[in-house]
Image 1 (cartoon, rainbow, N blue to C red):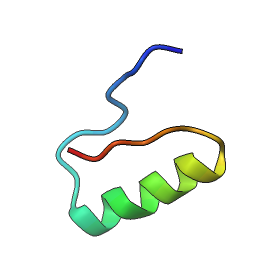
Image 2: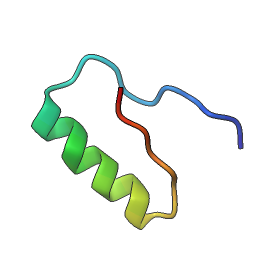
Image 3: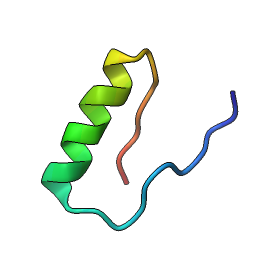
Length: 32
């Protein structure tokens, strides 16, 4: 699937937790 913005302007700790969940589901995640 194409790259997409899933979540914007969230706290860094929240972003890290979200990233971990997505990676466990097999997604590639890039935090900006």
